[in-house]
Image (cartoon, rainbow, N blue to C red; front, top):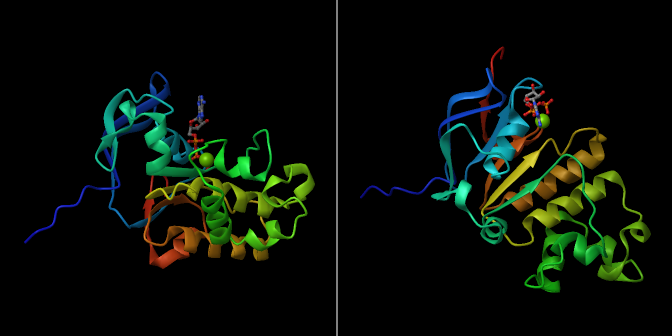
Length: 217
Ligand code: ATP
Ligand code: MG
């Protein structure tokens, strides 16, 4: 018996340009299977971050189709997106509110247990437990380092336990020790999940496959 699985990401014949006549993607195809770990490479300006934004449905491609677990991102409701995939960008983007809200983004459907679980996965739970106000601490009172803020972004991305994780250069501008901590957190977060990341380090994860986009590679 042949099992045909719906791919985690299926990009078919994608064409996209910010400006007419300057295509970033020209009939681009990419398939990432469920459970796969893929590191995206390409020179600066090749379109790696653009691809993430297209996958997130933030831009409308001029041609082609992007499906996440069989669903077209162009028509996927926001609420469903958060269940399907989480994205971590290069810099942590704070929201108003306490630590709990930094992770739940104010979604009342996310329990404190889920938030603690996410903190545990990224290795921040102990740090937060030591704060006098715990999850109710203001971000400014938590005194987190840049690396820890990045771990907080991962906690935010994984709190709904999405099946697909997208990471964009999250280990850039980090010292080696912090980077190693982040990589361990990534390994735990990636367990059983599909991971598409842009980073010189994530290629070390589970011997994942490397896909290069753009020319001059
Ligand atoms: P880096 O490795 O430097 O992060 P990247 O592969 O992520 O690069 P993108 O940020 O996707 O590259 O950019 C691809 C190209 O599109 C670049 O030439 C960039 O200048 C251009 N670009 C990116 N964002 C926009 C935008 N909002 N409007 C117009 N052009 C853009
Ligand atoms: Mg980029």
